[in-house]
Image (cartoon, rainbow, N blue to C red):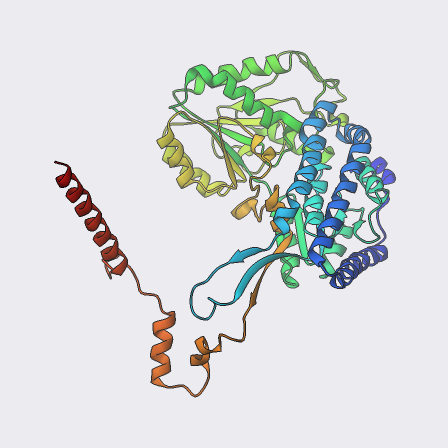
Length: 534
């Protein structure tokens, strides 16, 4: 972050952070107290939550142009990209939550026919967690801040939001729209700052949940600090997400595949947690893929310069780290032919979209997630050996992409390689599916959100069992004094019998005999009927 950006964004005083945390907790408990005096707390709570989501919707809608302009100033993101990938998705997410909220808040009935429960009433309700912390990243500073915030609101929580300090103008605009939207005091508190302010938030140990989006390195720190106070987390992390182009992919579709891969690899200047980080191409397709990469690069970027509408690296360190990798790679680099990058590229943090081929697993570009507009290509011969390398070096990616026309081969890859998600025939687009869960596994994080999954993430499922008093005759066997008769009755009433033998084979029981008997009677009846006809 530059000195200029530091002057733009006023960091929240550490003492003020404690006050904001307390205001958030007070807001939640005050709300619950008021609801407890209502004749129908759930109905009143539904109305309250929907109202807050409606306020959020219009706050974003009314400030949409300001948000887009702020993102452009922060890292040269084009309006088209911001509308397509941030504001439209966010607004749709909010509307969807408002729409599904009545259904999501409705308690779910559970039945259990065993004697202790058969006469009682069992429901599972989803209750608010309390005061939650949302820590947002820089790469999609609006969507990845306000979409989790909307999910937390839908679940009835109070929220402390920590926007990314790396996009200061966007952070300021978000704080402005949230503080002027008319939310009750303490419902949404915003803390601005960097490492010290985030550490203060994490060290307080007072949150009922933490939602973090960012790198695995920082994610492990968040999890460690949260663990000290047993605070549950959702960690949306990144990693090196592989893309396969297999020997069973139609050659006629290679150009289309490359276009779709480039949209994911170079969109937002590669600063996407689900970006295709590297390309694995079977040797039979390799030369054609490299050829099409060069062709599509020049088609997408016919005259690339520092003035091109292309998102920039977020800061100097990110730019220098990427250039160091590109300068030290042993592979062959492909960039747009008409690429005029001047001496101002470093100061503007501009890295042209670059494909690097003829590399191996030990190349500098294959060590860590690149998070840049750079796409390394590795040629492979044996699919299983290639998957073994992934398992050894970059297991459990956030997503894997597969370009293959053989379902058996696709199933083989999916079975061997765990990932948070998978897209076949495209890249990145799965994050926009409204009610599909989005989240990682292993090193790419844990927990999920998206549509009703976001509501669930910020809720706690509570089982409520209401036992009547008149049925005590079915429960008296549990009362002292104990004896052998009660034990036999208890086993008879509660213990289920297996439908399989010790070898795991299914065995015939009463149900099977009754079913067979019914079938025999049916067949006999049909036969008798046919005999009478003839």
